[in-house]
Length: 293
Ligand code: ARG
Image 1 (cartoon, rainbow, N blue to C red):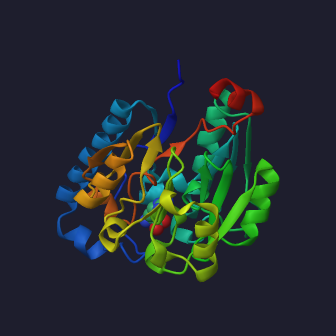
Image 2 (cartoon, protein in one colour):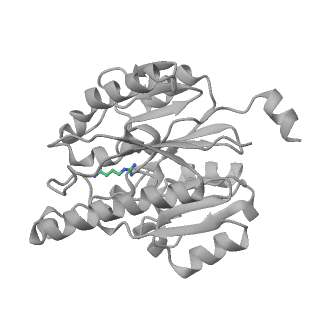
């Protein structure tokens, strides 16, 4: 039997939109109806956890902390592969308080036997976790975003820590500030991506590595709806409420798409992928390839 994917989520009881570190964040809109949005956020977080569990994942919920509202986006906490976690260094002071708390949470996962090694990026080397470093199981490599939140230098550190190949992708739009807002490799080898988020070289790298019939271009609406920011395992995809076009395109390729209303979190610039962190991802070994064929 296949093991369930393990996804970390953070309890949303300290979530709010109280500062601006990306163009989606609107504290003034949030403060017009704090209680209403807060309630909607608790419901949305619960609905996401439920959809992920229904799709076949095991969700581990960890506590958030007062004054750190963006902790609900653990995709930014670390890069995790082969039971090794490399913990983030946040670019903005607003999120730096999350670092020691996530370090502690990952040490806890180590104590529970979920991880073997926990380290952190060196000081001054900004890197915002799996949000900017996405594992592509088909190509057995990372794709790493840089140019907005994460530094290009972080890519060398990541490569050395995991010993895995990485393709750097330069992000050129402040609206698509993490790679996970505009890039989604799927289990079947397709890659959903939003071309306007990438530099010329980055686009060329994607198009060189991914065969044409495996490229799925996201529309402006798909990207602005945070639907590229999706969680995929097996044939399941869980995302913020998609447009019909995207749902149909993915359905035709054999994926089951579950849409969840994540609008309170989109007010902070995040969707389904950012609200999770996959803890059990392992690189394929020769033995696994033999067993699968
Ligand atoms: N407000 C958060 C920030 O700007 C949102 C993070 C969304 N995370 C992501 N992986 N895209 O840092």
